[in-house]
Length: 92
Image 1 (cartoon, rainbow, N blue to C red):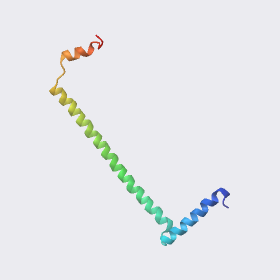
Image 2: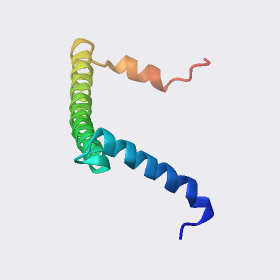
Image 3: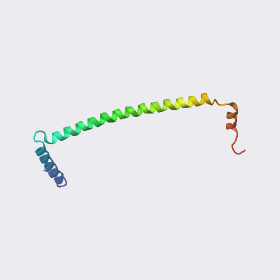
Image 4: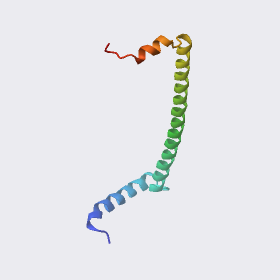
């Protein structure tokens, strides 16, 4: 038998299955499950594509950052005086 605490869930399941069978006499709940599984697969594929795009964008960002850093060294090469100033205390 069914435990007392499960009876409400059992009744709700029977009502849901019956109403689903009325809407789709051929497939019933199995049709709903199939549609949901299909939607999950579509969303998983979309997520995977988005993750690939994120990795690609991060790679592009890192490349651009490297180019900007390299370009700034070409335009403004570090000078010895600049390095010496870095070693001096700020409070003097």
